[in-house]
Length: 311
Image (tube, rainbow, N blue to C red):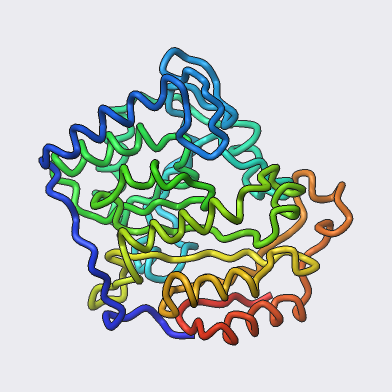
């Protein structure tokens, strides 16, 4: 599979951080917290007044950790690392979540909004190639404000929205011209499978709309002369046992409805954790045959850009 190169140039351009439109976006985004419909759960919690949403977040930002991460895709980690900020809580509820202590048991430290901006500058000074917001959806309002504030104060590295892909188009549009890179999961093709393992039967439909919007904003992955991501979309596809990820349908969608130049990270790292041991079909690691079947589906769809993993 091909390494990202400058030949896949997107039409992405950052907005002027002082554009009047950004002030209007922040006002609209802040209002969304009073009856929360930021994610597809649309739980209507008044998070602005401290009510907890289905994501287990209120108005206070909970961060689990921040550091230089060297295990992301090559254009993100590069030689100096990706500056990951892990947020506690999640709008998904995956039975096999590898970070369930953070996402579902909500292990995190409360921080003030200005502290989030301070962390972003600390990460940039440490040499990170980017600021990587991990599980950002339920804190989209806070991240939007932090990104605008950081840009206005001179932060230069790209922003990465590292998401499950369970995102509303109207929320993603807040980040148009602000978020440089989308690193998004495509987990399921079948609503019944999504319902069983992530309590989200609408995931396939929501996810496809979200991916199309991300691509509209940032286009195909673009890298600099050193192979470091500058802008664009990267899709992560985690292979589940028994073909439960629905790889063929997902890859066909990407090739036909998004772009055959889309970069795919085909992930073999699934292992049964959290509640997966209680569920027969996902209570084991994947086999080499299952991974190769997914890889063949990717190639059959004409998707040649991206990265594969060893089992």
